[in-house]
Image (cartoon, rainbow, N blue to C red; front, side, top):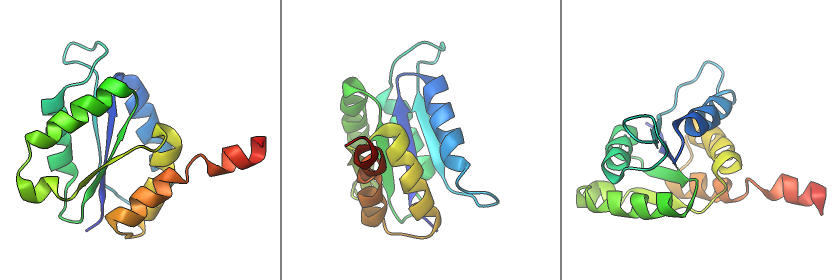
Length: 135
């Protein structure tokens, strides 16, 4: 089993593209990366129930790290936690990491079997190479 990842975005296209990019780091390997993005009718928005379902789908028992794009996605993710059973909620970490850079780094270490806390820590380092280069 491995830590699962969830991408919460206002835009389904944005979330799908971020996941596609992250999956490029996993040739021939599988990892649970779920998307909860956009509205049912294809518009922009987030849905706490969809986020809760994505967390449940990504959870193998080793934890889940959730990435969010904008402020109200954070609020929706926080609300989604209220829909989860206590044991699942305790395994979920809402990450303040940058969506794309954090997701890519987290994907690599999660696929390698890292713990939830290690996956979350790697996600936070996602901007470091860009910051160092542009400093």
